[in-house]
Amino acid sequence: MSTATKPKHIGRNISRIRELRGMKQEALAFAIGTSQQSISIIEGTENVDEEKLKAIAEALGVSAEAIKNYSDDAVINYFNTFNETVSSSNFGTEGTLNNNCTFNPLDKVVELYERLVQAEKDKVEYLEKLFKKE
Image 1 (cartoon, rainbow, N blue to C red):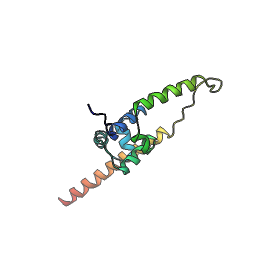
Image 2: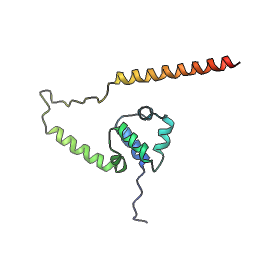
Image 3: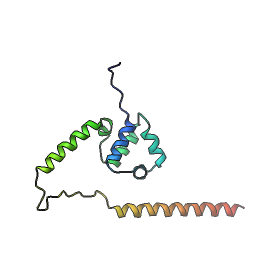
Image 4: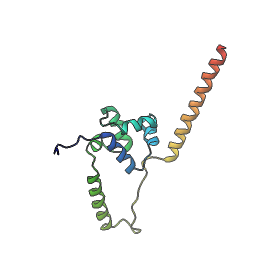
């Protein structure tokens, strides 16, 4: 049995971080301007080029290094430490954490709707050109 360490599987790390963030492949694809199928392919790939990795890292809210060095053990350790800290701290009179969203979900919906409308306009324009040629 070999004692050599397995190389890091960057795609799998992306998948795990995305899942921990509660993000679907479609949402990540939308955030970096690609398709869900591309994200699926990337997550199945052992190595990812630096440009894509940086874009994905930004969309996931982590650094590219965090993706490269991700490990399940470190995450479990982090959450155990975090829970111990939260339980021993005082967070205001209600004792709750304030989880602020870093973006307005309605803005994202409007942005998606505008992109869909533009895509439909482009289709109509293309079909009109085809119709005029005939």
